[in-house]
Length: 102
Image (cartoon, rainbow, N blue to C red; front, top):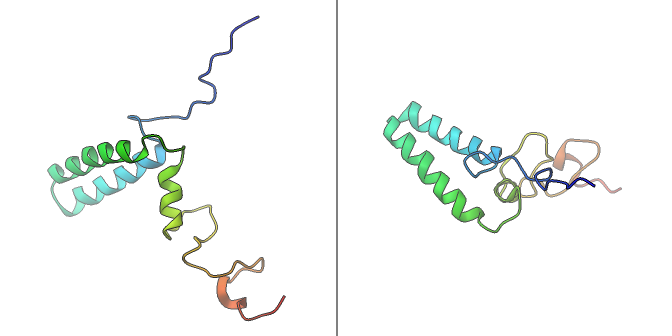
């Protein structure tokens, strides 16, 4: 019988962070390069990397993505965050059907 390696279920990590977190850091650094100095972009990237590592320590996979979603940040592919709409409708339109009785 062959031994099964436990790396099958390990998440993909880049620099110790999930790809979504590295994307957030890349966007913030890109913003800093465009509007400020590359020094500040590097500071934001490495400072954010350390901060993300400390915040995510001991937390489940996707913690920061769920935290942003919970606080109302729109994420493509997910329904509207709970802070943006009061009621979900199968017919679309968000709050347009809020006063209709079903």
